[in-house]
Image 1 (tube, rainbow, N blue to C red):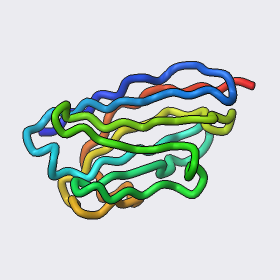
Image 2: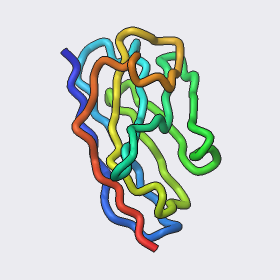
Image 3: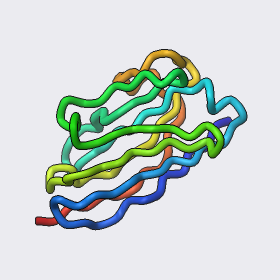
Image 4: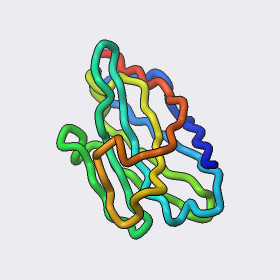
Length: 125
């Protein structure tokens, strides 16, 4: 069983930065692909970023140059650094883990079999 706990969300003004963290239980963290997804009010959940165990990274076009994803194997934690935040980045951000894929950084949510409960990010103008 894998448990994911997100933290680091909050309220920030446009142009500001936040770093989300996702602490993961499970001894095989190093073999998981980890991802971040978000869901804005009234919208479907969308892919944000993913990182494989080998360091392959995939970012949504909408956040390239703005967000970065990284992982710390020693801490079993994945991070999402969000810079130059915009009001349209307001959403609940979810961390996800895949024990199905490991070398691929996938944007396909159906490949992720464990999900956190989400952390709210609110960006005001």
